[in-house]
Length: 311
View 1 (cartoon, rainbow, N blue to C red):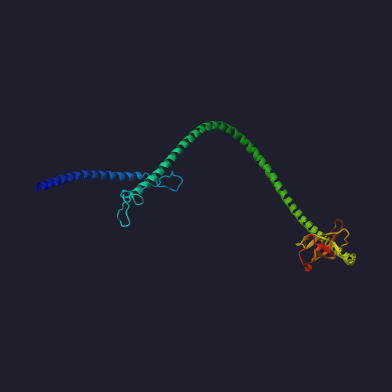
View 2: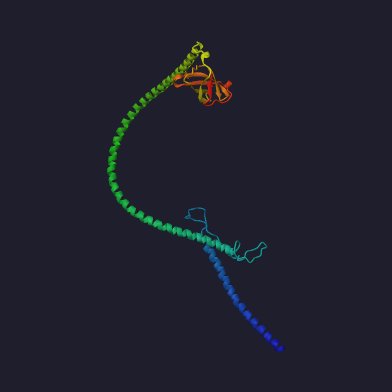
């Protein structure tokens, strides 16, 4: 038993010495890792400060654009802190160092993309500048030739200016004459317009007078007894050809042997139905038609084309 105890004590002593040795070695490695981690965080923060913040401005060539501001404390949150204030075993997503590094990488990718676009623009610009340089050389040659031509043109221009001054004086005199004539023409035009209005008014009055005279002559003939309504034979006289309800008149096609006379009231019938009555106002024997006025008080149904007309 004593031997086993001694062996156990020796074994514990050896293990203790080994543990102390390992602890000393791990402490050195810990310090080294801590220094590396501190230097790495500082380097990441310095690197992040070289990235520009995304801007809504389409022009990225903005001087003194804002840069990313990253502090070492932003990189110390390896695990996400829960609502209870304690770290949880979540090492990705919002609130962790992984999310901060992902955001920095996204900004770096955007800046790299803008850099490549700038390179493409520079390449295109170099080509444009080369072409512009060649064009400038050719333009200088043309400019020298144009300069010589310009000297001669200036001489011609001086001569032309003298001619223009002379012509300007002549034009001013002509314009003065034209203005005077324009005033006279405008006066005459106004007078003509007034006379045309008077003529138009007189013509309208004459036409109205003619229509009134014709109407009165027709009524006079009726009053004088030229038409005897009792002489009209009874029976069908024709058919309705056109109905105009807006103006309250009809056009009737009359029979060849019809003896229809003006100012006669005719009955309109459709089959065995009484439609209404019309009063004959004008007869045109050569066209076999007659015009009539619809008598509203005696109208039973709307008149239509094809209705028979009786006396």
